[in-house]
Image (cartoon, rainbow, N blue to C red; front, side, top):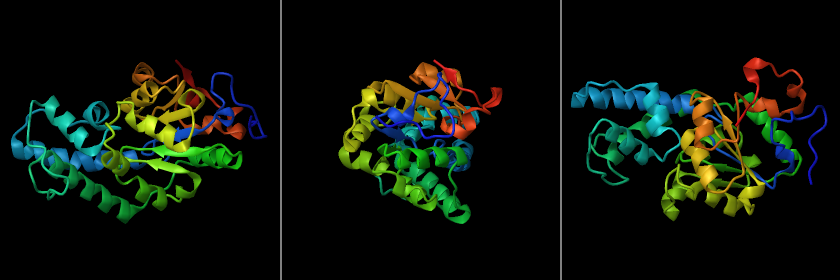
Length: 266
């Protein structure tokens, strides 16, 4: 078994990732603040779509967390439009961004996201980077499970790719026919690719759909990172513990953890 790194102790309320067989991280909102870039891109696209189609109920951040967050891109579009009683053709993955199809709208959003990422770049959350470095140095197998087809590009831009042995992302999901989160498929595939038993591994998620996916895949430990989805919602979805930031798992930070950065156990 791998002992925690020196310099402090992990609070009793938190699982000890250093003794896990492996740790599988979501990307957007867990390792990098790309969730904010995604949110802005979705808002630009849906605001335009709603205006063109004369939909009266505006698109909000609450819509993002309920219908889009954590899902594969096209599934998120379909889910959001379904909430407004709108049905459009699914289309094809190579539809032009201007096409009024599920795929066209999804591709329009991806173009907006990619342009923002390339213009502004991305840096990992400091607490997430510190934890990943410690886990890597301790020899804990690490992987990424992300619904995004941009995961490899984001990991590379953030300087994180070398930390992870495997990446199961939207490209892999499409290739292998994996169902979108909250179905178990993506986290089950991530555990299989990393060669770990979900019951002895840890999943880390900021989306309710992702927490539900990990729980359905048999992860006994699901860490929810509350970046806006809400601690109660994450617990209801399957998170076994909820924190505000992954820096609470970094030993040097645990002694100074205060009420604004404390774990909320399920």
